[in-house]
Picture 1 (cartoon, rainbow, N blue to C red):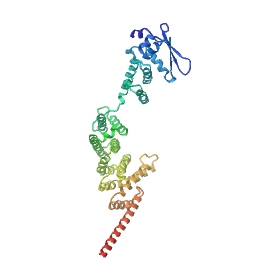
Picture 2: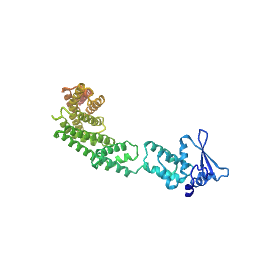
Picture 3: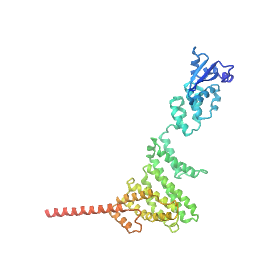
Picture 4: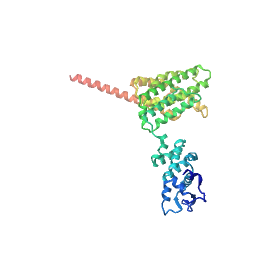
Length: 428
């Protein structure tokens, strides 16, 4: 058989003893002068055809426009040796098209070559989609192609997730020259895995080791953020220090989003509340009180996520902690918002104004949070709000109305209770 492949060539009209006619919907067929010994040896389909006494010297094959070239490629490769086949492929599209025909015409050598090529080379997204659509229909022989997209077991998924968390939170420092690029890539991978509908992911994030590593990652990011905050007050290169603390704040925002998807948001909230006085102390230091507005805006955006989680009951913490959260951040919000608005009104295109959505979200979260506090704590906070210079933002009038209504209702219930006790005493 190897000899026939070497001695003969496709369309060698002088030695050809059988003609393959490719017919498409355009009518006139294209003729390919072939050799029965090659066709029989390389394809069971052609072997069966040629063994039919009625076949004669012509074999008709009907094809469509989109797979016409694949038929031509198949016929050419019937004349290649087994060793030459694998080197003949130059695209995923071509190999996948020929593979479907090799399966149809029972060309084992060509099919094995296609499988070997497709299993080894990289795929683009559109190619992968097509492979996932086509290959499962071809049968077990083509399944090695899909090895890279097969589901992995729980242990493997867990190990990948933990490794990504460690790099994403700088628990493990990447080796040069990767640095921040690897950390960013790991953060994207964690987000992708959490957003995936893989049935293993809920089991992974419920695993105690995964939770422990995620908490450790949070602590590490907080430690780095604290370190970078300190540098703002001690370094003369303000731009470099601000850039580092902005990156640390970005990492904090990322871990906040991740932990919220892992039902670990309470861990972040507790850390943030413990850290709040420290953050505000640095932001209101004399060195920074009139600068770094971009950093202060980012801090307000991150703080909103905490206010939202606590205010709407997604994270349950004791009343004293909720009071600390409101009392710590409300003055800073009231002070910072008017300054950002004022600078924005003076400077066209000022990038650090609080947009309407952020303002409404913060205000709504504070009102919800405040309305769920013990009434005496509400009264203290509302009294401070009304005695302040800035009543416009945040507008707590809704919380005040709720407090007034509840207070009157509580007083009425108390009076009614005294009346019932008095009447009971008289009757005795």
